[in-house]
Image (tube, helix red, strand yellow):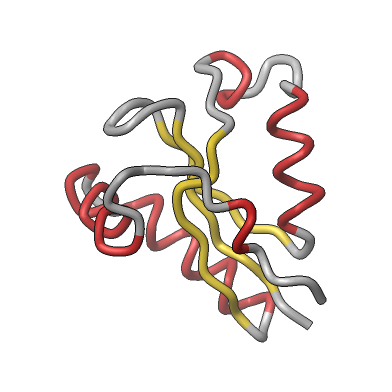
Amino acid sequence: MSYFVYILANKPHGAIYVGSARNLRNRLKQHQAGMPGSHTAKYNIKTLVYFECHDVALDAIHREHRLKRWKRAWKDRLIEEFNPAWEDMSHFIPFD
């Protein structure tokens, strides 16, 4: 069973959102549908620019919390190491 930590963006170096989910495909659909009142809906944050897999839910949750405390420049660097063009990575989400 996989758990995911992910980062969404509205454009390169624009607004971002850091989250974690068990089913990343479904969670991404929720963000893209525009959950009313959410940060992602307010700033039109819909593009999956980074994700990582974890075997243990608690590991993913801890990683999410650590990333949320990172400086913005560190998050940008993390994204650019794996996705220099800030392109949508949803087609790379593994199937369970």
